Image (cartoon, rainbow, N blue to C red; front, top):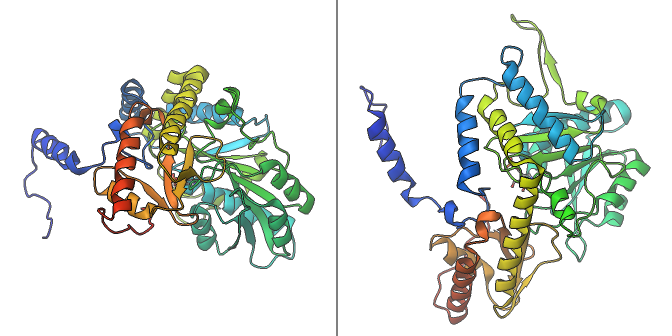
Length: 413
Ligand SMILES: Cc1ncc(COP(=O)(O)O)c(C=O)c1O
């Protein structure tokens, strides 16, 4: 069917109805049916974020000189994030469209820095644990760099000795996560920082998931290893606002230990009719709304609000985990420290369980190695934890008895 634009425009009322109807088949995130993709806490916060976004829907973040409102909100949001990450007066940041862009800008800066400070390197290489997010490989691919993925340890965390052993003459930097997407493991950043310092390398910490809430979780008394600028040797950190910052998409930050490090992320060009074009982002035009929504979320919640979201996310995880562990043969992979975790079974085909769940109104992300199902617990998952546990218990039973359908392939998107 060819979809042509209507010759005559249609009324908003009619379109609105049609769009609401389209939503009918979408995943019900308001009731916590999602294992990924959405970070939703409550209607009150959603309303603040929605209104802030629409107030600045038209403004362009590329033109902060003509939109000082956006410039101020961007500056203040980045300063708040830097302070959450234990930055100092020298730390410098960039507001980006998401984890992928933050990681791209960090890896780009790492490459440019290596060209200057590590003379003699050939194709620059990043050494990373196998658990690193694919955004790393996407960045390296686009930047003409190599990634060497090293098996994780028995605890599913980066293995510092193996990473150090893999460092070669072309290594520009090390990559680690806080936490990993798949199993929610915070890599041993302190040990990796020491290795980076010893070898004169850049260390990027992908805290896309844990950057905003991670330190609040520690404040609540949980054991969360240090992962930010408090750790010597950490050069850059990606921290997503549209994940644990509970802001609107697209919004993330990439933070550099010093202004000089951030300068390596700049692209400048002036050989065209309009003179100097210089930017620290991959994107050109940037949504003013996303900057406004992030600022509003942080001001509205304050530290107390984020601490509460951290507590609610951890409580949701604990409820889900406790229920899952009552189901025979299920266990959690490793010792995840935050609100993301993965679980598996030695007896039941968990990919078949995920496939069946996904056919019945849930979204369960599958994990291939180790085999399992991924959970990203957020506040909305708490009140719906029992529904999830019941659905998993039922589906595990169906798969055990052979009544459930075939296994789904492992695919994130
Ligand atoms: C650890 C980690 N890094 C990077 C990303 C990429 O972020 P985005 O999808 O916002 O580009 C994700 C996304 O889930 C992630 O979990």
